[in-house]
Image (cartoon, rainbow, N blue to C red):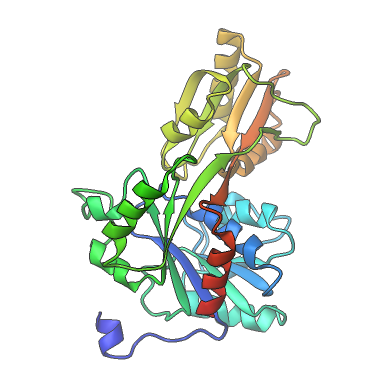
Length: 319
C-alpha cells in the first residue's frame, strides 16, 4: 500500500507477468509458470526469473548446463531443464534481474516471474494469482494461524485468478460457486487440473514402470500426500515425505535403497522437483543403486472447460 501511495513501485526494463500465490507452498506455482511459458512461447520471446529459494548464493545468476541445486535452487533448475530454449535466471532483486535480462538476452520481450506477488518494488504488467482448490485462500488465515503470507484482501491486486489443482471432473455448478466467492477479488477466473505424468527413468534408460508395480515414494514438496494420492496406479509400500525444498544427502538415498531391499521393491519414485538434487547426489557420491531404478514424475497443467484459448488471450491482454 505504501509503495503505491508514495510511488515507490517501478516498472521493469521489460514487460513482466508475475505468477504467485498468497499461500506458503502447495498451489502448483512452478508447473503453472512452465505451462504459461509454453502457452506464450509462440507469441513472445520469454525468460523466467526466480528468487531461487534455498540457494546458497546471492545476486544475479543465469542457469546453464553446469548449474547445481545448491547455487540456484531446486525449482529454477527444474524449469531450466524442462523449458526448451527459455533462459532461466535467479535474482532476489526482481528489478535488477529484469534489467540484467534486458542487457544479456536481447531477443527477450517478456519476463515471467516465478513468485513475486509480494515483491512490492516491482510494478509488473500483470499478476496471476493461484488459489488451491483444496485450500482456497479465502478460507485460510495469515500465519501462524494459517498458511497465508498476507491477508486475503491482497488478492484484489490480481488480474487473473487460477483455481489450481481442481479435480478433473469439476462441474460448472461448483465452479460458478467458487467464482462467486472470488468475485470480490477478480472477475477473471480460470480453473486448472494438474494431471500426473507417466514415470520417466531418472537416468534416461528405456525402462517403464508398469501399472500395479510396487514402489517407494520420495517427496520433498509442499504437499507430499497429494502426490501419493495421484499415484493410485501403483502400490506405494512406503512414502518418505520430507518438507518442501528438502536438502537431501547420501545417507538419505542409502536409507531408501535399504528400504527397497527390506520390502523387496525394485523402484523408487521421486518428484521432478527433487529429481535434480537426487541425481546429483548419486553421481557425486558414486552411489551404487544395486539395480534399483529411480523414476521421476511431475504434474502437467490442463485448463478446464475448454478455456485455454481464453486464458492465453487474457494473458496477452495484460502485456
